[in-house]
Image 1 (cartoon, rainbow, N blue to C red):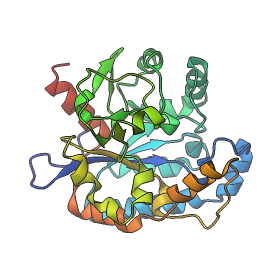
Image 2 (image 1 turned 45 degrees about the vertical axis):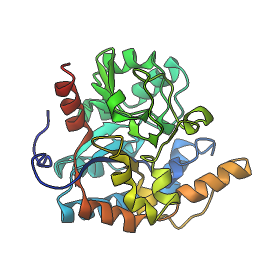
Image 3 (image 1 turned 180 degrees about the vertical axis):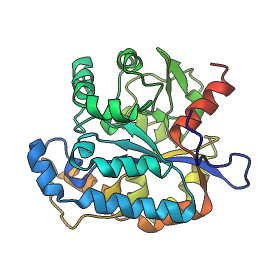
Length: 290
């Protein structure tokens, strides 16, 4: 387990596991139809500027996070991902192109495309786009060396191990659910919203700003360590407002998702201690006797 720079778990103050889904604004919409070359050209270096601003903020507060990286960004800007690791943050996988994972074949194809990234960094953590994964996918993750996943929503107490892979749910807030374990997929759906609010999602950080500053404390009511994530384009907004999604509801959701939450991010860094996801995975395995 990587230990350099890990937050001191014995220190005073509330703790949360915050991560960054490292994707460019061009990855927001999986239905855009842009080619890999077009995505790189449209990004135009935005992801480098945004990520370095985030890294400098994290340095200022002495915070260590996990970056779930869309690994084609490593092909565009390899030094950027190395810098993330050198600064003591965890580098994990968020697929290669941010394509939806619907089938086992989809997952295998994304991992095949990400071979160079996996070989370079040996990530042990994975998060699927839209936090959607199926139970059958865990055997594939295990085969490729992943030891934890964070592609579901739920209470931290429901964390479980499948095929040797620890599942760490993104935190929700809702009515107590006394069922054992997590049924997959458990992404944002009508069924989920009838039971719990997935407030650990970056969507709520943007949509509820500035009230989002209270989210970690609210989530602590049902999660000992809240698990949250954000995107670079929420912290350092891109100047474009291009949204190619069909359907007014989808365009409205992306618009809400893209609201700046820099102030809330800074507030959270100044009021909460952070830990990397791989450290949380180890802590959960120790407490559950895995």
